[in-house]
Image 1 (spheres, rainbow over the protein chains, first blue to last red):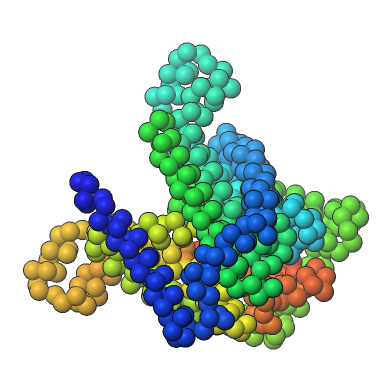
Image 2 (cartoon, rainbow over the protein chains, first blue to last red):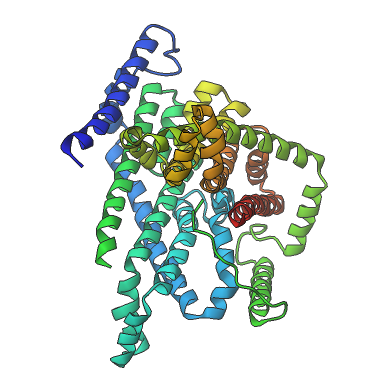
Length: 252
Length: 260
């Protein structure tokens, strides 16, 4: 692909975005769009600094990041653990794999009132909601990764008289790592969506609560700025994990 | 909701070890639940006994108000799917058909798709008010992205021979869409609809739990607010069965189409 072929679409995408923002600014200033419903993009941009300083975004970001890290730790321990267990015990896998898949398609986030009753209005509820949303993807991808290990690699391991534990750590796990990471990435995406969503819904925690707070105060520019910030954080997170996944894939 | 690929369910004999294990797991879970309910380990009523939940389930299914609220939610989701699905389909076909547009805009869809949509709810309330339109809007922005991305991917996967055949017959743009593109990409579209429906259900119901006075989401949060735990469990059970059922139905439809 030539330099021009790469740059033209990039310029077109960014150009369209800039034109849309300018158009919004013009329409709101002209009164075609009610400025009490949609603040001008310049007002939103101006609110960024205020929101970051006055609403202590770094702290809120760290709160959400801490919840996400706890959920990630639970996903690694239980998601991969259960996946390995189901891979090892075929009967258990046959009996429960379709249940796990069904759980993956169930709207588990709607259980948040139940979790509120059990764990209270606390970080535990948010972390558990993140974990519940992400765990089916991690389990299923762990099983898929381990099952997809090439037979010849396992045979090589057996020819070296590796114990079951050695076979797992030296052969199966490295071979399945890329697929397991895909599961973890998917799981973390679902977890993060739920974490920010539940923070917003129960008005507790980090970035999700900030949006709810600002909306309840009818700080329009601040609300839009906070939403843009969360979108930015999500996009950066997905971009980085996407790159990591691509980097990991050929290595496996 | 997770895109987990299609699992081929193992053929399970009626009384084979798999069935027996499944029955054993269900029995064990129910027994543990009942034991916890009677042990007093958790706050009273947080884990009601199974008979209480069963009674609440029967009462819920016999309650006309439940069906009215279910109708409200189903209507919101249906309209959301119609608007968001059609918009996603249009954008997907456009991006899939034009490589320049795809390279310019698809990355935005790809990275915006997984953002938590519920954060847009305050904006939707400002734009569309506190009634059903704001819930429909939440459903629309939830389902738009998976449908658009699936349609774009499906469009690119169409056999070029089919497209050349359409062009050699000098089909117009609309004829190309209805005669070539849509029939050839029905599977990815159905897959996108399945994913879109799942997230539309979540988006709409979450919005109902946040601010509403009707719909299943409202019933759930109302049961929570009044600490009517048996009713909340009953609502969650019904909701899960309905969601998984609808998802499986669309999945089966995709499977039937694939078999043709």
